[in-house]
Length: 344
Ligand code: PEP
Ligand code: MN
Image (cartoon, rainbow, N blue to C red; front, side, top):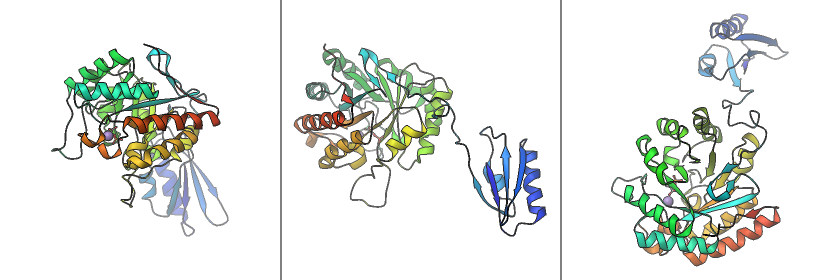
């Protein structure tokens, strides 16, 4: 960490910075320059509180030389993490994995129809929320445990893997009984007690980027999972809040190559929540695969007009089948392939 002093900082100001660094238990290296002095802080173990230094008189700015996260970084582990899923599927390798299904599990008929349709089109995992983190307490909250049972039934029939969300620490173990991958949603990306609990289960976690989270914050949330011992983490770019209501969110495509550079963890994309608009889902799915996404999360409903949540962004089965055809072609161009469903 570098503490850059103001042009007019006095010797006393610089001395105070040096003393503060030493009081914090680190070494200070003053570097006088022509225009200003910079003080290097040596021995940063990630616990330095920069605001304490920033508040000192004469300090202009603080430059972070190292990232605040450790285990998720490429510096920590150079080779990409491949998250292994049951049935030989893996995320973060050559394959592009497509996870599809409704926003919420609504009924046996609905989830089975969705599962059959997405499998037919070539998806390898079924998504569907049994516990839903809704913005309004009056919106459909999900079927809860009954929904998990229906997901298990859909897996039994189709062989699709199950991705479903845990919304609180107590729910992690319940969801882990059925889920092949535990989803942590955007609204919970910084629910640290949930992250800690999910870090202690032996199931892969799909961690979605928070609604207004920076890439650093996303990686720090993933760090919680790794710090608790769970290295099976898949990140997900699902759009961030912007100022323009033309789309539900702003799809941050750059997050994909950026995360690949900063971290060894795989990152998939969710063009459904990123855009909120059915007609934009397929083009953005193509773009995400072209940008190097390790997979896609797509909302598909057998009858989107009857959906209890996110119907407006859900694809009907025929449009999803077309999306699959298009992303297969894109994957091939960049030397990857869309993972094929296992034979049941
Ligand atoms: C979802 O996947 O249905 C969901 C609620 O997504 P997000 O947490 O990204 O809003
Ligand atoms: Mn949804």
